[in-house]
Image (cartoon, rainbow, N blue to C red):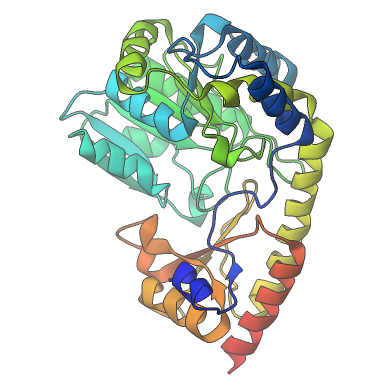
Length: 364
């Protein structure tokens, strides 16, 4: 609907899109140009990715988290989306039971259901900071085969403290539950919050990350996994048959992104400014029941005082204000009709103008 409005000449303030509005860092672009000119970026790489990039990703875990990760267990993928397909195919069989938080990223549910896996929804809310807990897992009436954890999460931006990530990792390993840790928003956190990686916490966990969010390489379609030894060969076979290899030019360029921390952290500083602006302005516009936005670039709002139909609500806001936001029904099939998500990944001036328009609209 936002695209149609824009195509018709209408103005749209994009608070619905979950991607950085910034391009890749300059060093990444320069490396891609050099690769094209050299002619070395035209062929396939190994299915698991270029060895140099895998080694650099492994070093990133040592630099960022103090965790030892063997480069042999790093798998480069076609975005985190390709990683989830490979991980779910390798780790689960049709009929397995895999739990995930609701609200949560809709692609988890859709991919699992396409593979015949039973999705077990864990309804979460303010009482657990919109995250799953060991108590929820223990209280289930049937055993699980898998658990998906996202910290920071989409759509809420909420996070688990490191000790709670470790507790879930230990519980899953002890019970034979395959933990899949979605860490694609690592690096985008606020205040004293710091994201904890499951890498090193459990020998059976799968870690998924991406170059799309913190690293601002969304359209380059590149991600990675850290996988346990027992899944490495199955994932290699699946990757070879499904994808052949990740994009070669993207891999050659991505090696440089780890040297761009100042530029990337400047993006996070802008997100922080946008976040502060919305957390101040949205309650004044009537959106005053907000999930804790610890990380990522989202604010998740309970709008049950305004509507019982989040999709219709978002369409009306778009039509009457030009502000595009996302209905919660995408993230929570049961309760999402009374929630909406705001993305603050865009320009600060757009956030300010969107907040102004929403305040005028709700007053009217």
